[in-house]
Image (cartoon, rainbow over all chains, first blue to last red; front, side, top):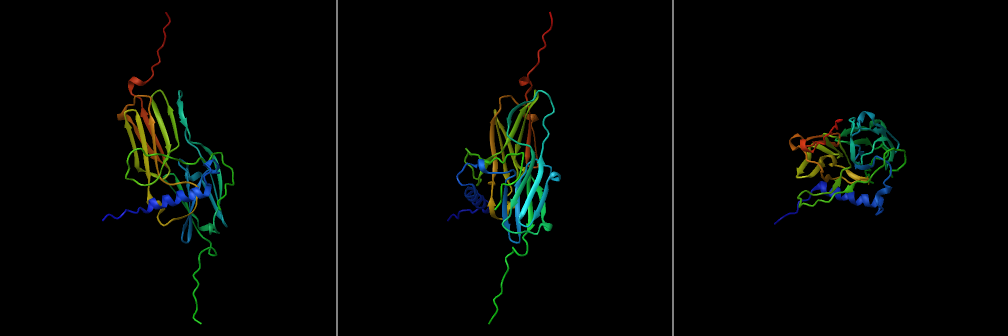
Length: 142
Length: 137
């Protein structure tokens, strides 16, 4: 008897694919919007926002979180070859300044936001404001 | 929910799916990393954006003139997270190139930093272009 192996990450990937399609429909994604693209996750008491920012100096990224808005600002800049006689075959990676506003699903406690930059991915974890967090209501006996 | 409101010099390019041609037991989506490739008289340099890939999860293969770069992301980064709003897919990276030059395979250098793979592919001695000076008679 062979039990199919259910990989939780593969399931998450499919979920992301499905949501990506529902966000942008079948319109080919020239409409994706402003750099950097972000994914927003629910992590219980926190929201987690991830942005792919490969090759960015994290000290040049500013993050502001307030109410239900997150602002990412920074610059992506890399060293071009300084040697003469350089011929480019492909040039697909952009550089420049960026500023991105992300509207979050609910209000957050921006003072407690924490950010990490790991392998080119910026991850911001910010607690939901108390009013946004689900509250357990106890039913009192009559 | 999330708005595309703001100004950026950089265009948000959607990640392009990469097709795996080999039979793979690794599940999940693969994307084509954006690359810069430039050539100097001495070497070919490839820079590829592979966000989410750690240095121990990248493979570089040179088979004849076929260069393959592949990277995998760490699923642990996503444990306990439930997607609410999605603008990009998450998966590995895969891209193949045909090199027009003979490469000195022993001297290839690869480095992955902040999600950017940099490959230095030195040209084999015989492939380097030589400048021939014309002597005045």
